[in-house]
Length: 292
Image (cartoon, rainbow, N blue to C red; front, side, top):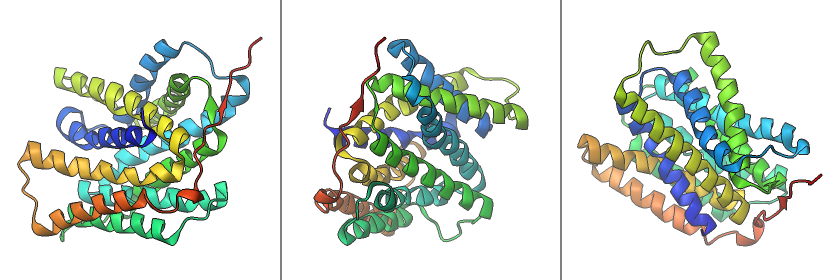
């Protein structure tokens, strides 16, 4: 599959997180994050059926923590402390973080046009999702910024380090690391629901298989094929997808400002794909598993 198409599909799938969480899952953020990570890891492990190379174990722990552990945990904390629109707006800063981090970590100097395009996209997201009476909670803001920075740094390191031969195994072991970390946090804070309904179970299955396992496999493939900074602007599709789902399933009617915001996001996303192509080279390096 074309790498940028993979990135678009991954970020659109992530946009379903908000509607699934608020309509199908119990109000236990750490439990949701742990189940999401472990539920996404297990089917991929059953398919891959292999351990990562020994020299990759430390990197898998770091990447699993950044791309899933911290990201999931902080994301759901932000979702509790902030209105969904505010949380989504801070998440939209992720592409800007990724483009800027590529400078010191990859030696890739971003073009002003590319940074400007991503910034305009973030402004467009703000126009779409923010309300004039939106509440601001410092803890929620810190969590939202932390989650965006975490997944941006994780994406840069995937670009920098490459991956073992098996993409599914690479994705699965990261999710398993995150699942173990989040399960420990869940146990410490006792964030476990008293019971699960049939609707909860269906929601967890969708979240684990499609929004997590499939989406992350597509995302890592996109990074390897096109480069971290080149796929970063697709993050903007996540809050826009969440906004569209709210409109469809909750009967929300967008106003003029929000429609203009959607146009800005789409325009910035398209423009960003045509600037600074020479600044970021695709990371095609794949480290083969050593054979005994």
